[in-house]
Image 1: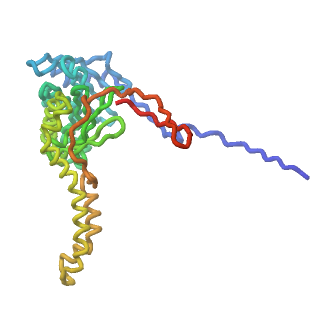
Image 2 (image 1 turned 180 degrees about the horizontal axis):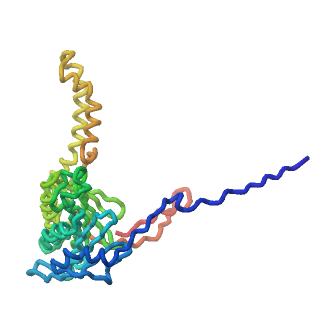
Image 3 (image 1 turned 90 degrees about the vertical axis):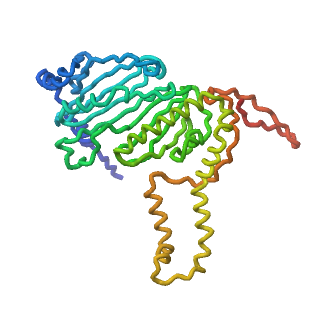
Length: 379
């Protein structure tokens, strides 16, 4: 029997640019470009820090400015300015403000301005007070980050004609009694502010779900997600009301946590008992609406409605109307049976994540077989 040997010669591999695309290297900044860019900064008394700049990445850093502490509550700050220039003549100017002493040392916030006119970017940045990025509530500093889309850009004159000219709050951070808070505000879709609470590595938080919800109706209950807690705060959807509303509600949140976390968990139930019952009712509203719809459904057939009545049309199209309303809402409602408020059992808000594990106990049953009980963690 004749054997046929098939030889296969694979084609040579294609260049990596075929798969990943050709990445054009940015042109480094020249001395002539640097001199033309730093003119507005030199006029305002700011000097370039060439050692911290990156000409290849087209980034210019300026020498930091120190701001001394203003009173007992206002910490010392360091101001760093960074200019990022694209080859499309669009620039981004960032002002980083870092706390250098006192509570919250090391926390930093960023004010970002984007546009084509560098002089206008610097003017918008300097128009925002340096202390607005670091606000102190009840002795706790809250660092707030803002974004400015400079009006009058040639490229965004049509697409972003309704963009706000003032600073828009986009994020914030704070640390209270070992609890680290991070706030995120979507500046485009008008969604609620997201709150994330974490602890130091090796620590875990023992928090009630209604820790923030007792402040008011705008604060939603927390959800425990593995190693952190997440919540939301309802705020105004659009500017110019959105940023002031966020600033006000974040301030109330910090003041509430500064007082609550400074006390023992046992006092939380006694102080906020009435508010906790209000949160329980608030959490039960989606369930009550669903039960009400199920209760009145059998009674629909006893209604005497004309063929062309509006009520008949609404009842007939109730399912798609409810479905559309769910998608229109900014956050999906949670249909649940809320727990009854009870006193907190934990003694501290933050505890070590390392727990001692008991040795397995041997259980000898009536049939003479030995069974090991599961490991139980020490509390």
